Length: 143
Image 1 (cartoon, rainbow, N blue to C red):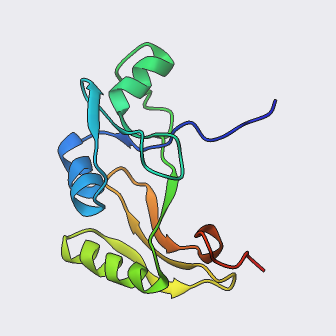
Image 2 (cartoon, rainbow, N blue to C red):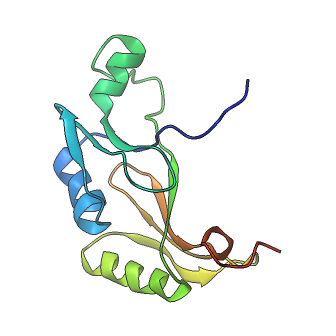
Image 3 (cartoon, helix red, strand yellow):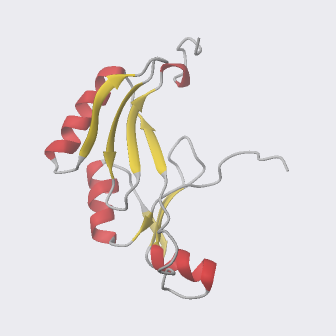
């Protein structure tokens, strides 16, 4: 098998209003609703699609029922969203904190040169707000 690219990524949501408060209102990601309850942004750089998939739809697609099996862990993942500069990480995290979102790690520079801060989404995703210098056009490559 040869994977060409990540076709999509996004949280499995339980509460659409809370999800929109975090992803749309807090992080500023615009969404379309091509199918009832399925919110997507196919233009966000870094992946081919960023979608909020309701847990009920994920359960139905996987198990044929809108109920996620109680004996299985509810799906979760992590996500990093890059900003234009190292300084913008701290600014973004303060803005998110001011909007009432739970910050779990303050902005700091990692030993490998990436600046990161982390918060939790309503779905339990560990979300990094980051500046990854070598991923920005015109920046020197990672050492």
